[in-house]
Image 1 (cartoon, rainbow, N blue to C red):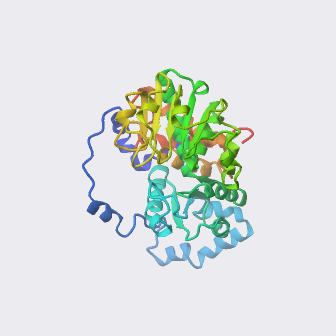
Image 2 (tube, one colour):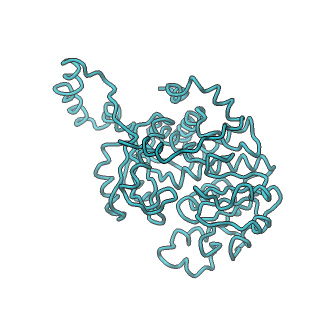
Image 3 (cartoon, rainbow, N blue to C red):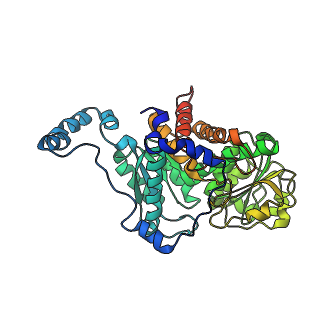
Length: 416
């Protein structure tokens, strides 16, 4: 299937109207009731479909015994045929241990399953990919790695979801090493890709280039570290990470503890001016605030930011600062919520990233592929760019095909 037709099967009929709607204020959404929510989840949100007819004995003989034995023999002789003659190469495993679910925290495997079902629904709707939720009743990294490696012949890629930091860093790294397929922790890299796309366009709105920005990131967990990484890769030199103890810098004694190894690494790669203290000190003269923590930011700290400031308050459901407060001091404001302009939403990134990686036959999701995805997302909004429109809508049917094509191009570039 060609890239431009990925979304066409599901949404071509409303593509033009959706693009027009992107520049219009959305109608106010009616309140959603608990009854409506529970009814929509009753029995789960997923089912398995059958893509071949099973109406006659001949159909059964082809799809199952005896015909299927021919395919199994062929795959046994040439394992590469599993890519073309099973669904594994089109199947994403959505894996979670339930330790960092949305804003709910460590709620366990069973309680995380509705979220993983939702993620699978997004994969199918926006990326045309089948996926299977796999929730594991263990938080032991060794056990999770062993489990996924053992069942790996069943799928073609792994989307790690809602795994708490710092274990998520080790888990992703070990699975990338152990598996010959794309692996990505979406809470890290999906967030980072969309944040970079949004920041690229926000900078254009206020007339500031990425490399010149002073950026403060509140939250040094999964998303914060990944955002710092992609900004550094994009040429942003002045990045300060904040955690509950304040600015991360090379002189902090607690960073010597083994559990803070990741923060210690970034202490040596960020905060080039050696800023110490908390949000007030970090935000003094800063161009950008990105919040990916449960903290709050006092308004007086935002007041110390530079002219033409940019605020991304991405915590859900409660942003680090109310958008109406942030707008008193910032030229561009974004949140993670759908009821405010500029929603920074992972669904803009992950369906196309995984689709592009799988369509390219890539064995890894590389930094170049993530940067390409961010550029593709940013470009889709640039024809109507404004302070209230820095990224396309998550429902814009152009997004997944554009990201897919960009990721495929990056995957097949020389040296990738």
